[in-house]
Length: 275
Image (cartoon, rainbow, N blue to C red; front, side, top):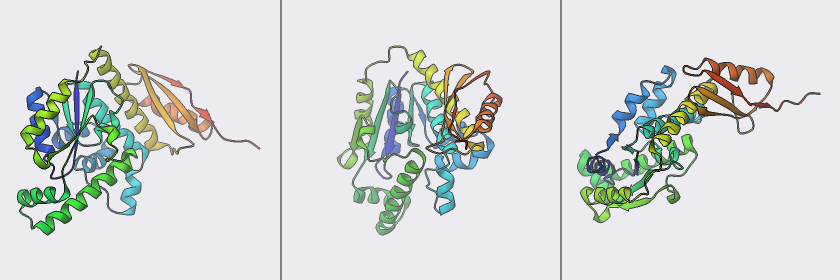
């Protein structure tokens, strides 16, 4: 299996490069339309959140920002990326895939950038805007995307340690940029057991969906957090801390009722103090 993630700034030719990379490598391209198909399979209550993330549009008001900081949504979006990667031979555009898949073997992470002025010129030409309008669009779009990724993943897009290659298209065509990424991705060391990695990713995606279902119904925090592992298909292990025994029992019941779960190993600990 092999996976390429491409994070890009608006006007950097990242979308064009992503499509060309997929064609050169013979991989599936997962863009907005692709992620939308997977989002439709999620819990209906999360559909609007999936649509917002798919559009890569940051929430504007206070309530929306609070909404997107809900741990349940972060788990869901991570599950979508893991599920996509489990297929292998895929190019994933945006959506924080470079963060969700940071430690996964066989994944090549690229970032496509360009100077803000050049990006504004490209946007103006493509969208029929004045240069001033395009500059404002680029500034606002950059801010929105950064805000959304930070609210979901709590990471900075400009953290260069997230990427194997950062590509500046100031003096590169989309074709040349795609060729560089494709060559670099091919040079990645092969995965020893692709099937095992794929299965592990699928189990991690499943665990994150269970974790999302739990966090939708149970209040968590850095001090009372719930983590879900899936060591074997259909079997989940609950780890972390909850406030009391009732919450521990409730979390176990939510996990047990999740479709596909056949066994729950509840290792949650309680932190309530008695007087």
